[in-house]
Length: 237
Image (tube, rainbow, N blue to C red; front, side, top):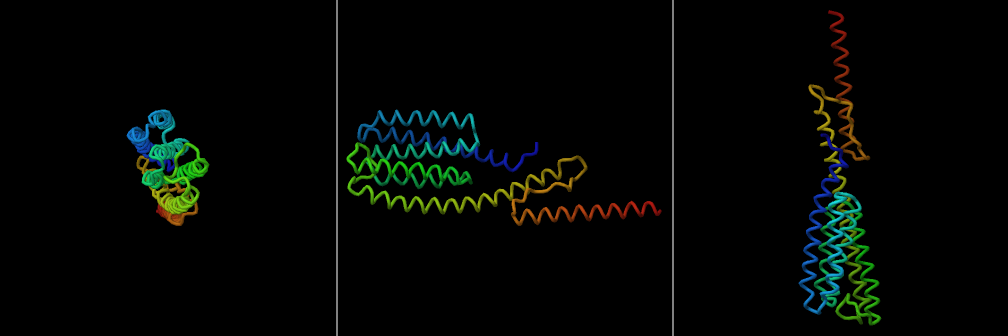
């Protein structure tokens, strides 16, 4: 069965979905491991288990969809936010944010990157303000420096997210080119003893694909001319 480039992209996304599901499972386990530090068993179970169940549901029911990749990005950031609270704002736990952003880029789609970055940004801002107001939540180790720490972290998250978006856009364009060439090459050999030179790539203004389409057109035209000459020679003879 011939696949379109969009179907190939969905298949790849479904594979990344399964990886992200494993990551979320690991994050839930880490949350339970952190629970004894400050007796956060209740919140660990109340947040971690629903997140894991939801992640399992969307991965199984909507594998490869935009809904799933965005949901998994948001849920994984929720788990990191939970761990930050459980560790009373330990800065080392914040490293998970940057690791997850890098993992989201493997979708070759900027949407989960934006969803994940927005989720952790809102968390840091809202809960950081609550912590600074003597709320019983933890984002940073020292509540007095919460706003300054938020701004510093925001700069790093914006920088990494921006770089990853640029990387994803470049990689996505290259992957699309490869997928389209694969789809067309499969289509050219689909018919028995017949090559359909009328097939064309959806070039999306990509120079390599446009050049390939022109080459197919030139080849089709040349073969057509050869056929016309052959027919005329046969008629003459």
